[in-house]
Length: 390
View 1 (cartoon, one colour):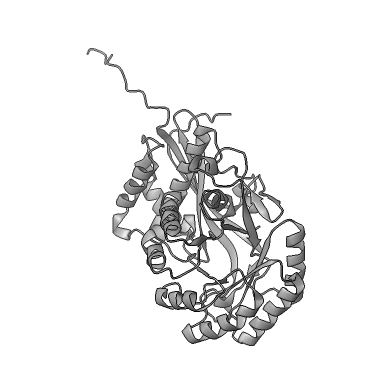
View 2 (cartoon, rainbow, N blue to C red):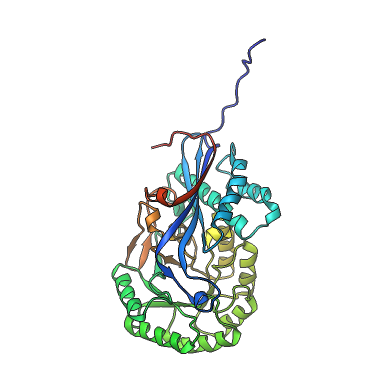
C-alpha cells in the first residue's frame, strides 16, 4: 500500500486548540442579605458559583473568561458550556462575533437569554482577553479607551445585614482606600428605617461624597414614588432598582418624575431586554452585566445603543471585566468595586483619588490564583493542550 505523502494542512496560529472549563464555588466570609432576603424571596447568599473558561490557540496564547451565578445556576452553566465547547475547536479565535453566533445556534433550543447565554459569556470574554493579549494591549485599549481610569464606588460594605455603625466604619475605610463613592442597600419592610439609615450615612459622609442606594426591586409603584420623593433630599447619585426589573413603564415614570437619577439593568440578560429600557429612556444609568448578557460582544451592543440614547453607564459587579468596558464608554461612567472576587486572582485593581485605574497588562490583566484549585468542584477539557507562551 502506497503511504500517504500528501501535505497536511497546518492550523493557523490563532486556531483554537484547547479549552479548559472549571466550575468554582467561592465561599463568602459572611452570609449576605439584601431586601430580597428580608421579604423572604431569597435566602442569604453564602457563596458565588463561577464558570471559568481558558482558551488556548495553536501558537500558545491563552485567554481567560468567566461567568457567575448567585444562589443557583452554577452547575447548569457548567453543563451547557461542556456541551458546546467542542464547537470552538479549530476555529479562528479572532472571529469573536461569528463564534458567539455559532455557540448560540448550538444551543438554540434553550434560547438567547438567561442561563444558556450566561454560559457562553465565559467563552466570549476569554476570546476578547485572548485577542487583546495577542495584540499586546489592555482590553480597554483594544476596544478604544476614552480614559485610563474610571470613577468607582463600593457596594460590599453596605448590605442590609450590616449594622449601621459597621456601615459607617466600612465607608470610612473605603474612602481612605481611595474609592470615590458609597452605595448602601435599602428596601426594609419599614421605609422609615431606610430613611434613617440613609440620613445617618449622608451625615457621616458629608454632602460632597457620592452616595447611591439600591432597593433590589423591592418596591411596588406607590412605594417607589413615596420613597424616591423622600430620598430626593439626600443628593444621591442614583436610586437603583426601585421596581421589578421587568417594569419598564414604571421605571420610565420614575425617571421622568424625579430629579434623582434612576439606575437599573443588572438583572436583564439580553440586548433585547436592555433595548426596552433604552428606547423608552426608562432609566438614567444603565447597569448591564457582561457575564449576564452573554459576554463582551453583547455588552458592546448594549453600550452603543445606550450612548446613542444619551444614557449614563454603571456596569454591575465583576470589576475585573467592567473596568475595561467602562473605560471605553464615551460618557463618564462608574464602575462597581466588590472585593468578593479578589481571592480568585493574583492581581489587584489599582485605586487612586476616587478612580479605578485601567491596568497596563495585556488583556483583562488578571490571572487565576493558586487558591482557585481548592474551590474547584468540576473540570472539563476539550482539544489538545499547547505550550503556553511566556
